[in-house]
Length: 114
Length: 111
Figure 1 (cartoon, rainbow over the protein chains, first blue to last red):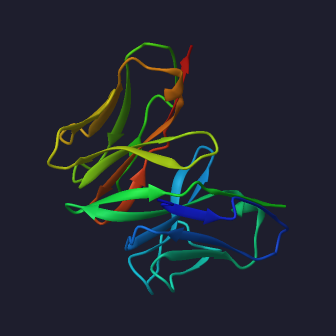
Figure 2: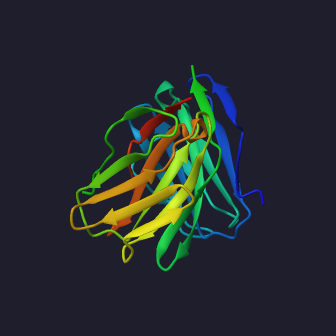
């Protein structure tokens, strides 16, 4: 089982460049999430999706866009990268167990913006 | 707003010691609490999930408890091993808020 796969694992960008992070899950989960993790800040929710064709803003959505055209994929886009977006990005998907969201995480994507 | 605190931020113990990691939260109206471990440079691995109607969950050497009235959860690790070295995070789900993460406790088990 692949679980949640993130690509790329590492990327270096220059300020102003654009890029897309891809998250793919093969567990037929409805919910998918994008988080960023920064030292001393914990994980912060960027955007999430409750199903194919839906997206919603999380805690820190500015500077990011997302799309969920297919149930198994959740894309995170940076239109004009800034050094403040240097971080480790985690994708997660979840299924419900008696109403509880049970999360599965990807391995992370480390992004550096120069 | 739900706040999740994990104290201490870092903990170093000798191999074989039993230890307890703490997670406290401010709003007792939670649906569930999950404990994860994160190895350096890796993603988060789910360890235990406690639903609001449960008091504890066990998996191998790990035992997690939940006391909603006091706003606390503990993760007990028995007979710690160097392979247990990682950062442990608690995550709460409840009310109208999405999942709320603690900042984690970095555990080092010394051989």
